Image 1: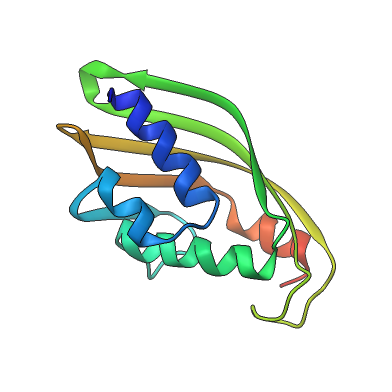
Image 2: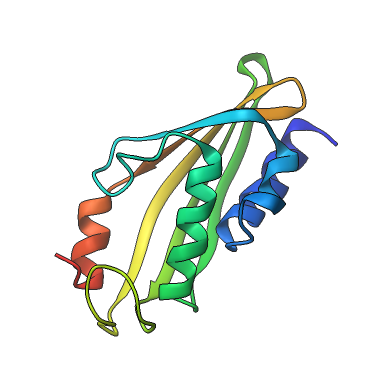
Amino acid sequence: MTMTDTAAAFFDTIETGKGWAACAPFCTPGATFSCQSDALAEIGTIEAYAGWMEGLLKLAPDGRYDMKAFAADEARATVLGFAVFHGTHTDEGGPVPPTGRSVAADYVYAMRFDGPKIQHMTKIWNDAQSMRALGWT
């Protein structure tokens, strides 16, 4: 499996809320995570982020992504995936009762590889706009 194939399979697995057990085979042990957002400030591993995504998709069971671009930089062992997440807060949980409001949020995953597996992932996302769209702030 190429770096691009691995990143694409991982992207779909994490974005469809399959959880850490399904994501782990794509990652190095202790794979790290970062995102410059208040919503994800406490999350430092891909394992924790996979759990967060799993929880998000319970709040917004219609959650889905629309891939806009996918690119590999072999020299830097990095793959970028740009997508739009769509979802509506219809189920219980989260910071407020279900709002029925929807979000269409642009985001990018920068997945850095160590050999055949993802060592670190950075999410680039404006959480404040997403929280407002969902009626959470």
